[in-house]
Amino acid sequence: MLTFRAMTEKDLPRVAVIEKAAGSHPWRTSHFIDSLKSRHCCQVAVMNNTIVGQGVMMLVADEAHLLILSVHGGFQGQGIGKAILRQLTEKAQQCEVRSFFLEVRESNTTARQLYANEGFNEIGRRRGYYPLSGGLSEDAIVMAMEIFP
Ligand SMILES: CC(C)(COP(=O)(O)OP(=O)(O)OC[C@H]1O[C@@H](n2cnc3c(N)ncnc32)[C@H](O)[C@@H]1OP(=O)(O)O)[C@@H](O)C(=O)NCCC(=O)NCCS
Image (cartoon, helix red, strand yellow):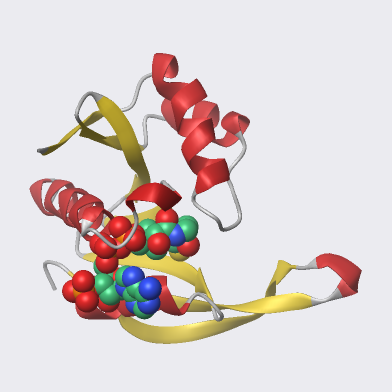
């Protein structure tokens, strides 16, 4: 069974393992420490007493911003990413935010499909937002969902 709870500092070693095993561009542990200190909404998904994924959402005024969403590579494709996103969306609804925003790499078709399926629309593009090696960069697609318009 999949459950959710707030992330704590004690979870950070396992959270770091998941970041490395998620297969994308990992967040450093310092990012999670900053998010916990800033009291962002930091959630972990737990299966059989093991953390299998995590998500961090920042609430600012009447907006929510998804900062990170990661599922361990060995657990991807089982609905866990969707479940974490729904958990965060529920928390955003409880806080009566109006809009939920996120940025995603243009090449991340899996995440873009997940967000589109969950009701996010593409509202813009930030050119060259993500630096790549060799002086290259990748665009960010900005997506948003109205929660309480
Ligand atoms: C993106 C990520 C969080 C999705 O988590 P997941 O648990 O694998 O995804 P789910 O099993 O919940 O699938 C959710 C949706 O994603 C899409 N999806 C999942 N796997 C996919 C694949 N291999 N190809 C295309 N779309 C896929 C589908 O639309 C799926 O919805 P459906 O099952 O209703 O068809 C996960 O792949 C991950 O951690 N990736 C690396 C980190 C990352 O890119 N994070 C997002 C940064 S913005």
